[in-house]
Amino acid sequence: MSTTRPAPLEVPPAEAEASSSSGVLVPVPPAAPRPGVSADRGSWRRGLRRRAGRARRLTRHLAARAVHAWRSSLHVRIGLITMAVAGTVVVIVSLVLFSQIRDQLLSVKEQAAIDQTQAGVIYAQSEVAGIAAGDGASVRATLDRTVRQLRERGGPAGDFEVVMVYRTGDSERPPAVSRSGIYPAIPDELRLDVASGGQYAQYAPIPDANGRPRPTYLVGAPVPTGASPAEQIELYYAFPLEQEVESLSLIRSTVVISGIALTLFVVGIAVLVTRLVVDPVRRAAGTAQRLAEGQLEERMAVRGEDDLARLATSFNAMAASLQRQITQLESLSQLQQRFTSDVSHELRTPLTTVQMAAEVLYESREDFPPHVARSAELMHTELDRFEALLTDLLEISRYDAGAAVLDWEPTDLGALVERVAAGMSALAERHACELTVTGPEQEVIAEVDARRVERILRNLVGNAIEHGAGKPVEVTWAANRTAAAVTVRDHGVGLSSAEAQHVFDRFWRADPSRVRTVGGSGLGLSISLEDARLHGGWLQVWGSPGAGAQFRLTLPLTAGTDLTSSPLPLRPAALRRPGVGR
Image 1 (cartoon, rainbow, N blue to C red):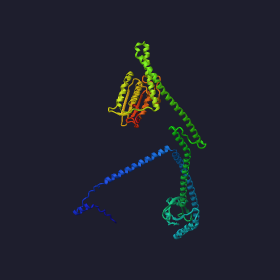
Image 2: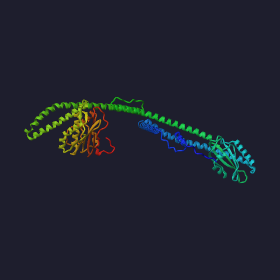
Image 3: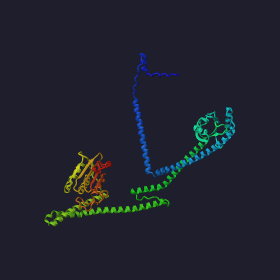
Image 4: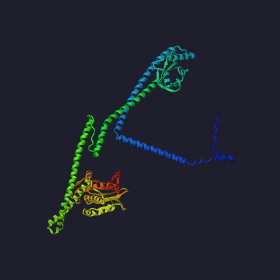
């Protein structure tokens, strides 16, 4: 009996000296962590987190590039779809083909093995007939000789090994084998089936000469001896499947390589065909884009007489037609602009003369009969409206000619908004409308053309009062670091989505039959939009039938700065849905 001694307790040198000097063994407390260990572990964890973060960012970047390539490239989509479809078909066909080849190869092997086993049973029966059961040496010699002769006879099933077993009752003698190590590897199920009296076969791994298991087809059958029923001889054939495995491996490799090559070939054909179709479409798209940018002389090259050539011919005909129409429209537009400008200037002189005469009549209206005095008042009012219309037409002609220039100056936007509200208060009182102004207390200075911004706000507030149906009109302004915004909100009849698309068109009115008290030319909002664009700003509208409308003017605080957002939402806060942006 062996005993195990406990391992000696390891004590640090300092503590060991102390304990040995005193002669008493003292429990040693756990050593304190060395300085820097926790720091090293923390830095290692931080480095691991950084690497994991870089890996996630790289994965997201690659995924985004893959999605972009999928969405933007027809070649990529068709190539991947073709690869998926062709690969699926090739895999299915390869599996079916390989399964059929394997079954056919194994079935041939099985049939040859069974035939050889049956022939071996007949030969072994002739060899062991009249075997002396009581003579162990004779039985052993007979079995060894039979195994050796069966091994030398060969057969159609290829390489094989032979095992013969002699049983007497419940005991069996050492088997005669052509190679050692085979009989112990024969499955018990096969032994029991053969011992019950019948021919059976089974696949099982049998070790080779080096002890490595290899797939083997085993066939076992009893050998009739004519002796007593208690005596039985069993014959086992072991047919290694190495050649079949090598053949199947070669076939599998050939099928896989052929499938990959076929898939790539189909994908290459699909990409080539797609390129032949897509390249002309891309050229057409590029030509169309250049046409849209104003290069009206761009045309597609016509090659051949196929469908793509007819497409290019039709595209060129369309481009020529568009060029002619655009040229005609430009000529008509220039003619219209020149006509508007000339008429406005030509009417200015006679209008001044008529206004002078009308002013004299208007000042002397108290000396006229009532109907003549009323006519003088109407003429004075309509001449003022006519002058406003001419002023608007001249302003529009300056925009069309590109002659409008801004007079930049630092302006207090809060004071400007208050001044517009004060100027429109009389109009609000006539419409029984409450006009409110809301804004920050601090001063906001912006580089703008104060005259044009004031004209924009007067137009917006005047329209809001006129269409507000006597309900409150709210003017709100705010600013951030780069921009300032003013919203004018009314609660009147509102605008539909179709009306909101045309509200800035020239001479457009939502209700032409409605009597207007402010302006009347239908050019106010068009001029306001041009003024906002000159500042590099935005003039936008929101409206809903029955819920009123809201206009938003957004201007950069510094001249020449590009806008990216607005300090105020376009949709009123009370009606804005969660998640709806500015």
